[in-house]
Amino acid sequence: MVIVPLTVLVAFWPGWHPAAAMSIDPFLGTYHGTAISESRNELKARDLDVAIKKIGGGFSVDWSTVIHKSDGREKTAAISIDFFETDRADIYGSAMRTGLFGKRVPNDPLKGQPFVWARIVGKTLTVHAMYILDDGGYEMQVYERTLDDDGNLDLVFKRFRNGKSIREITGELTRVGQDPY
Image (cartoon, rainbow, N blue to C red; front, side):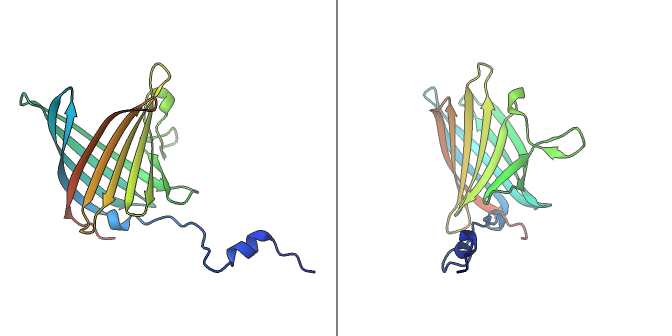
């Protein structure tokens, strides 16, 4: 009697395929859009810009937000994050700073820096950012960018502190440029 390892049988089982990383290719491009958020009973309009491009063995996501306050002031925030493939399908690590030996590495959340990772599931690219607060609690920021049938992005931003939702913003971004794959 020949004993065949279970992993060999499963690998050749009809209809079974190991998980493979989803491609960033459909998301590549530049996008512009708007969102409205409510904070302390005040509506704030936001201009949103996102650029997703391939780099080396991964991709980068650059985004900026301009918040238009009711008194006419504007607040701008911008960030650029490089992501690289990991050993886990569909999960990408971040490289946000240069380490001791010149290699790009993730941030250190114990130093107050956000620990960031991304994943692609179906038509949604999600970026997670976790912060460890000074009191030992945590904050999570989640950016879900979902491709619609026209190749534009629907954005859902969620912010949690110690597991409790403290903000949710939705927006629509139109593709204004397509990067070559």
